[in-house]
Image 1 (cartoon, rainbow, N blue to C red):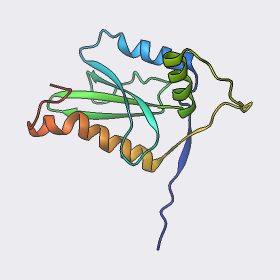
Image 2: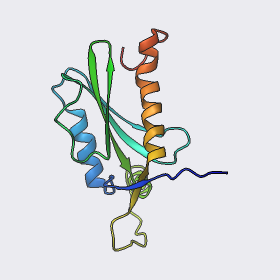
Image 3: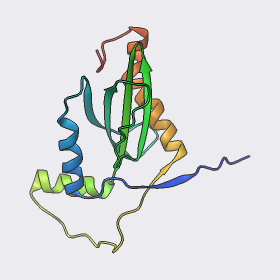
Length: 149
C-alpha cells in the first residue's frame, strides 16, 4: 500500500473576531458587477472557509486579496470568476457563537503563539472541486436554478 505525500502549508486564516468582522464587512460591500460571500464546509473536510466569489474582467485578476489563503479562477461562457478562500479557526467559531448567542466570552487557556492553521493539497483540491460543483456545475448543464442565476 502506497501513501501519497500530502503537503501542508501554514495558512494565515482568520483567528480573531476582529479579523472575522473585517472579512465579512469588506465582502458585503462591493461595486463589482457580481460578488457574493458565504461560509462553506466541504464534505470530507472538518475545516470551515469564508468564500468570496466575484466576477472579474479578465481570466486572471491582478487584484488578489492578500488575506486570502487560496485563490482560484473559473470561466463560464463569457464570464470569469475569482474565488477566494479563507480558513476560519474552529476556536474562533466557538468564541463567536458564545459571544453572539449567549453574550459570554469564556477565557480559554490560550497558547502564546497564534493558532496554527494548516491547509493541505488534499483540502485545497477538495475545496475547489466542491465549490466548482456547487457554484457552476448546474449552470453549465442548465439543469437547476442555482446561486449564479
